[in-house]
Image 1 (cartoon, rainbow, N blue to C red):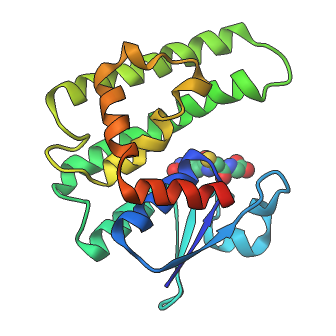
Image 2 (cartoon, rainbow, N blue to C red; image 1 turned 90 degrees about the horizontal axis):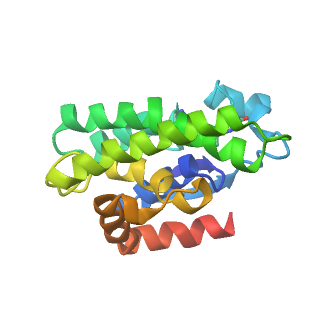
Length: 200
Ligand SMILES: N[C@@H](CCC(=O)N[C@@H](CS)C(=O)NCC(=O)O)C(=O)O
């Protein structure tokens, strides 16, 4: 049994999709980011960078933080959704180091900034478009992000790239990404994860 500490954000959705895809037994603990629960001392013991998601394996007491590290752990212990690990890791690092931070900043400057900052909006929009372009070129030559099989790399990118509306990105400009998003959205595990996250 696992406990998944999440909020309904792209990084939280990744973990729930992975747990559903892998058919693992888990319960959800909602971390209310607006109320500052990510700074609670008990939570910081599991996630020292005060961010969701985090995962605790209740059988062993092992706690994990950083969404992509958690996905790798789950892939390794189940032997599923990880395929060629070297390839998967490269894409996971790109997601964690660039796609999450850049799209996250664009979202913040569009929806949460107390005042409009055109320079920041332009910079993060350019980076976001560039990153959608990187994935577009990859999916033009590869069925899935890390090769021929659906893996945790797809799970890591999906909840971020699926937020195109909120980011002001037109899916028609990235036809391979658009088709890949639709294929993933049709997966039963992804639909189950979305409905769980709506309750969160
Ligand atoms: N690199 C981290 C990023 C996690 C992250 O940014 N989580 C956000 C929600 S999507 C968060 O918990 N924010 C709360 C805060 O910064 O106080 C990961 O992939 O797990």
